[in-house]
Amino acid sequence: MSPMTLKARLLTAAATIAVAAPLATSSALAAGFALKEQSVSGQGTAYAGVTAGGNGDASAMFYNPATMGLISGNQVVQTASGIMVKAKVENARATRATRLGGSSITGNASPGDIGQDAIVPAGYFVYSVNDDLKLGLSANGPWGLVTDYGNNWIGRYHGIRSDLKTYNFTPSVSYRINPMFTIGGGVQVQYAKAKLSQASDFGASRLGRPGTLDVISDVTGDDWGWGYTLGALIQPTKDTRIGLAFRSAVKHSLTGTVSFTGLPASLASALPTQAANAELITPEIASIGLYHEINDRWAVMADAQWTNWSRFKELRVNVANSALNSVTEEKWKDTWYFALGTSYKITDDLTLRGGVAFDKGSVDIETRTPRIPEQNRYWLSVGAGYRLTESLYVDAAYSHVFIPSTSIHLTDNLTGAGAGRGNLSADYKSGIDIIGVQARLSF
Image (cartoon, rainbow, N blue to C red; front, side, top):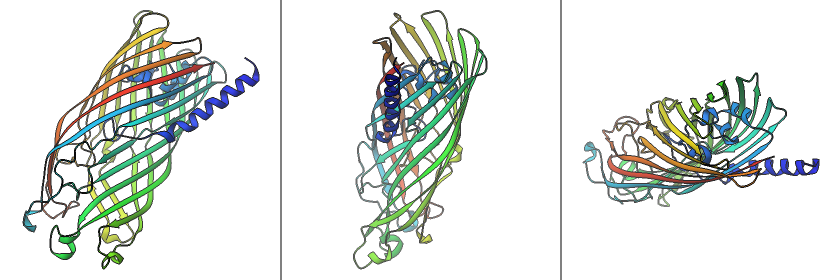
């Protein structure tokens, strides 16, 4: 390969990585608001073995930077995952607190599908300085959430729209200490942007006439933060690999504004647009993965991942006028994700994959809110990879995520953070389909 050809490919690779993340649109697909969809080759086994590099390409570096040590030469990977989310609200019921008369809250009791379909891309580039030292760059959207009920739904005092997007850029390095041990690490540079909408019963709180005047608040904010990733890869035999990885928390101080709509002109000056801020801390993740080749065709793999969701105790928005501060209790719990998978090489060019996984929900029914009405998830995935040329390899995968029916039951006794928002009950029927495609260029 001529120096100019190599330079052109490196520039193309860097450009691919640079534009991958900003194209992302996010929907919450794993426990909490995590997005697992960062590797299509990994998706084929329900992400079993990705911490140990079982998917065999540079996209494993998102889960464990030490897996870059498995790459020969240089490699570019671009993924795109099409997400079809169904989250239907049924039997929604809302009343005011008993001390306010317990009257029904009017509005749309059947807002339909509150989820949004999305295309989530990710990009990776690994450059081999030599056989032992690798440099990498990845662009991802690791956290995201969109739910939208519409301004007139009967649970509007608890939340209308929740929208979180993150864009993560991670330069990484790995080093093979000896044939058995490889270590890796990276620096996360993360941009977060959020919007929260909610209605307030202004008629009840200010006029003494519940339901006569709703005011909708829209809070927007953004921030840059940083964190790190660490990983190790242990290869006790030529057929077996064990991966260990840790992704740090990233703290954001989202700053922006809150604006209000719905006030009559005579009262508009009472609630001008003003400064607002909120704290967001993405949770730590620790994982362990196993990959084992039974023979030159069959391989089995597993992954276990712990996420520190107990960090998320409340959603607090601070406003310049402190009387307008908003707090929603969350009280989430730490979660585990367990996956088992297998791959089979039909030929040297064609590999089939399959996997199952269990993703524990982070919220109990007592604290589940309409902003993130999440529940346990059960994954079933299949995938295939095919070598088109010596340097170009493509992957495709399909997953269905089964989500048991769930519900929310919130009680308003006019005390605590949710005072005045009303009693709310609703049932949810949800499911997710994911179709992913991936291209890998090695040179």
